[in-house]
Every structure is written in structure tokens, then in C-alpha cells.
Length: 172
Image (tube, rainbow, N blue to C red; front, side, top):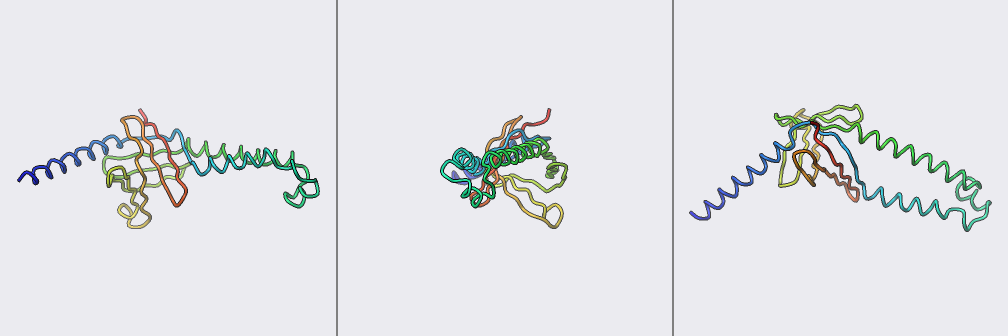
């Protein structure tokens, strides 16, 4: 009898926690920050390369290696391309919105592309987006809920060695 009571209490506590977390998720959210450790690492390597490129090569070697003997122009072009990429990433982040509805549907707006899926919290800190359940076709995506409060959350997504964590603020 004691074991049954403990199991029932544990199940009730888990259900209450999940229900509270679902209530915290319900509402409109906008992205405010993104962390991509793999990209950060690649950018450090890129910066180290740009700091040393051309220091130990002749103009002929540079032309053969990089297609240009003007290293300053090469670095400038690379920096312009990186600035554009970072600007686009910032615009994408600022245009990312999630609306978690009470009916179990999430509507997401990613740079004007609006889509929807069913959502549910599963296995502790996992958030499941399920297009198949909602539409009969599509994908299932599992995100990790890294943090969740009444006004902020952080969701991470991993694929192989790539991880992205996006922080959100709840709209008032």
C-alpha cells in the first residue's frame, strides 16, 4: 500500500509540474539571443587565419593559394561577407516568433514563413513539435527546454555536433 501511495504521489507531482510548465509556455514569445558554439569556434579559427594570412607567403604563392595576391583586398572581402552573414542572422533572430496556444498548437514565424505543429512537453525537459499529429504529414522535432520562467525561456536543438540555443522573451 505504501508503494502505491508513493507512486500515486509521484505521478500527481509530475503531472502538476508538467501542467505548470505548459501554462508557462502558453503565450507569445520572441527570440532575443542565439548561441551556436560550433559557429563561434569556426569564427575564432577564421579570425586567426585572417590575422596571419600572407605573412609567410610570396605574392605568387598567394595568387596560387587564394586566387589573389592582394591579401588586404581578400581580407576586406571576407570581412564584408561575414558582416552580411551576421546581419542576416540578426534579422532572422529578430523575426523569430513562437505562439504556444492552449489547444496544443504552436504557430511559429521564421522570417515571414509561418507554420504550425502540435506541441507537448515530454520526458522532463523535452519539447516536441509534431507536424504529423497536427497535419498528417511533416516532421517531428524535439527541443531541449534549457530554462523556463514566466517571462523567459531558452530552447536548444542538436543535430550531430551542431547545437543551437535560442533565448526568448514572452510578449507582454
